Structures are given as structure tokens and as C-alpha cells.
Image 1 (cartoon, rainbow, N blue to C red):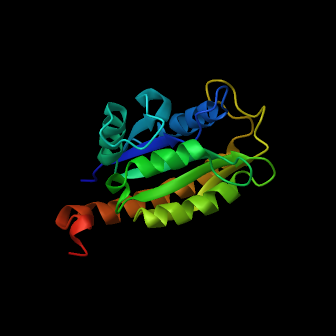
Image 2: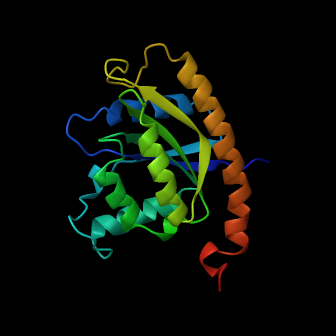
Image 3: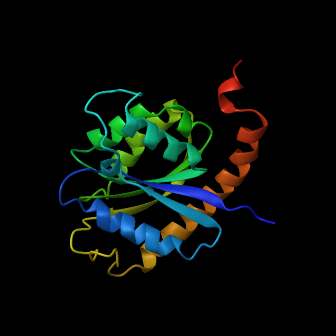
Length: 191
């Protein structure tokens, strides 16, 4: 019997009027076709996070608990000024152990680069968080006007093909890492 994967889709933007809502909606709509994936959409705006690092804050505790439940992650990130957002960095810095030994994939969007510069920088951050990043990405160059409010995407064929590859690799890594985390918790590996 095959186990399901608990997949957290994490918002990479908190800006008012963000396109991230539509891109996350598209990802979630597409993942409905995968019966062995349990989706948890994590929007940092839902947690009333503090403006400074306070791991005792109720919002940080709730965010950490949700991240801890995930077997794998998809980060939906825009590219701002050739990088990822400060709000995403803040979320990554608030929770450390929930990322350990888990795979992370990216869906990015932005101008001509489609958010890929943000993704490359995020790979460095996730390496420090002891996470494994999946090489395959879904990238949307100049996406404005391509997504409806509900996440419907204009001309979705290429994006779907990329997402199928991304999910295949993400599932492989999730299946490989889950038993390893259960046998020997990652934090004890260096002990």
C-alpha cells in the first residue's frame, strides 16, 4: 500500500493585491488530480506573525506546527528585485527544524526570468535549513493577466507538464526521506 504525502504549499508573498493568490490557487487546483497528496495551503497572513523573531508567539507556534506536519513543500514565490521576498525569508527564519530532511520544490513567477533568480537564492537558504531542493521547477515569466481569480491558467499545457515532472520528483524524495526521518530523527544524526 502506498502512503499519502502531506504537502504544504507555502505562500512566498504577503503583499496586498498579490498575484501569489492566483498562482497558489492554480497549483492547488492541479494537485487535486493526485489522490495520494494531502494539501495544506500555508499563507503567512493567516498567522498574525510578529514583526520580530519571537518563537514563543502564538502565531509562530501555530506556523511551526503546520510546517512540522508536512512531508514535503512547494514554495510559491515571486521574484522582487532579482530575489525572493523579505516576508518569505522571515517565515523561513522563524521555523528551523520543521524543514529538516524534507524535500522542497518551487513554483516561481516574475518578469523575464520567471522568478528563477529567486529560486536559485532560495536553494542556498534551504540547504542551510537541511532541506533537499528538487531541481525541477514550474516558472511563469511575465504572468500578469494569465491567471484568473480562481487560479485558472491561460494556455496551461506547458506548465502542467512541468508540474507533473516536479510532483514526480517531489514524491520520490518524500518517499525516500520519510522513513529516514522516522528511523533516526535528523537532529540526532550528528550526535
